[in-house]
Image (cartoon, rainbow, N blue to C red; front, top):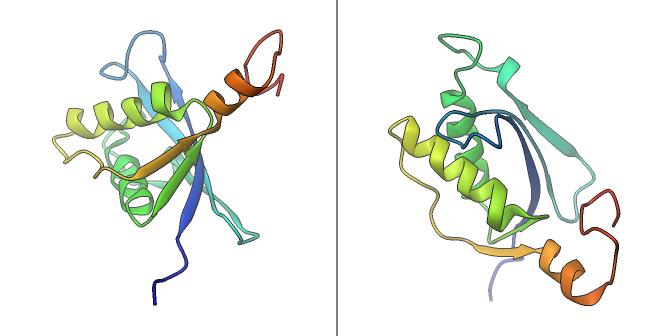
Length: 123
């Protein structure tokens, strides 16, 4: 008998998205395990860091959380959140995330609805 899959919904917030993740900084991740009521926040300001923009410890925490999932759910995470985190991990000399099943609901919205914009706000 298998276990109940652990599904994690998450979103990252970061600075310098238009400049690239090699110059950017992740400042928080909101996440929730599907079926549980508690929403969690991992924040740059709750870490030990060498300077105000050092997101190394935060990246390590996020990696540990996300790698416990059987499935990740995001909104535009395939194009944005996952590549940004992968880049930040590599920037800090850390191993990238292990491949995990991923459902990005942005693509569901894009192909199943006809909105003026596919931004989460519009959805």
